[in-house]
Image 1: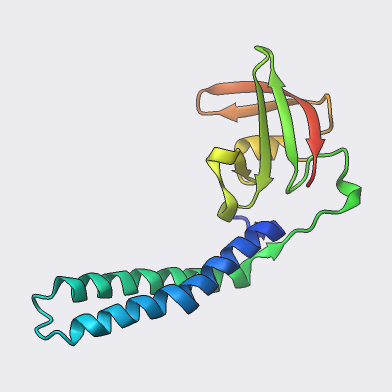
Image 2: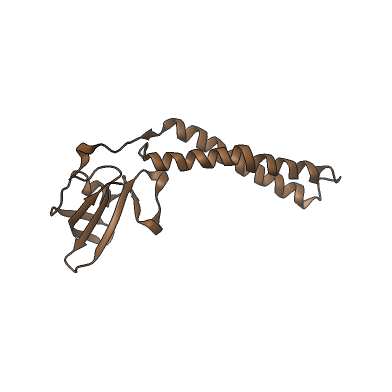
Length: 156
């Protein structure tokens, strides 16, 4: 089950995408479809068919975003969170092999593997919630149990 939490930055990103699709992309594709339809026979008009397919895709994404943005709860940083791992935290970890990793705990709509943003629903995030610096974290993964140590916790 998806958590309905999002950081303010994540909500803004989804809202910008919604506005872009609605105000820029959809009108642009609609114009292109209208122009292709004006060329005549629609049954063999590849531009018309592709435009309609793209329009359906945009409409699906718009419906998803409108519904999702209504469901999401924005979680703002609070000074009382300092020193413990909560939603939105950046956590620097280290294991026994001295391998270091830094993760940010975000909502499922904000997952970004390239930037190590992990969902709050992941086993790693669940194990980290409430931990403090120097705490040991045991994470059950598909490849077995992993032990990490919390080196640093910060919020931006």
